[in-house]
Image 1 (cartoon, helix red, strand yellow):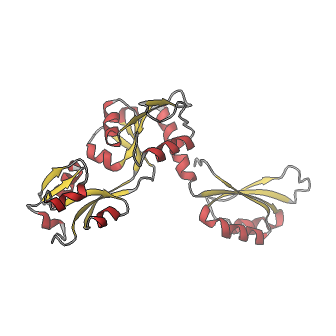
Image 2 (cartoon, rainbow, N blue to C red; image 1 turned 30 degrees about the horizontal axis):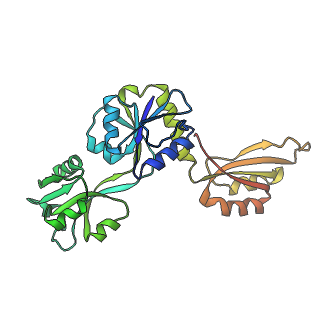
Length: 285
């Protein structure tokens, strides 16, 4: 099973980190290589430009790919399916124009020129609006094109909006919301290894922002403790091996990290003791 991942840029390190946390450790490193083996002999990682990954998957050079949703939409490949939203690399593809340029809506771009690195997404967006501007493809510095009279507006990626503001550009409308996704070629989706990879990556995402609570609770305070524990379903209750009288039980629960502070206070007041909180590396539901 070959997985294509970004070879550089803002998506590279988070992707490698996710693979490592999912248990797919890269055995021979990720620097300056075209591919790397993993601890799973059935999985190899290929390194490619984020924009090329959809084609790698569609053409069979890779079976799975990890890249931005925007890149897949731009590639217009028709035999690739989304398997999992990995929830990082969030950004927006927006239509923007000079702040004082008189373009306040999509209709104002009739007969105008729009510059972008995403001509296919841009063409699809304007086709839905019924407006037909001239779309000019550029390979970089898109935000400069309105200021050198190459375009009246742009369609470009933004995360925080800082670059747009620095270049005195205002968002006219959102074109596409994007994040990094796991994609697979449709003819391999039934391969058990695909499900293994999806489950491994998904278990890391499920564990993010969660904590594992363990505590000892007197039997007569168990219901009171149960009532104040939030989390995924009910807590797990187990006998304590060295408690011969059965006066206490061990209670384990998964809770949101944001609830830990209040939960510890609540369970302690309800009668729990020996409370332990640990991080969760992976969580398979």
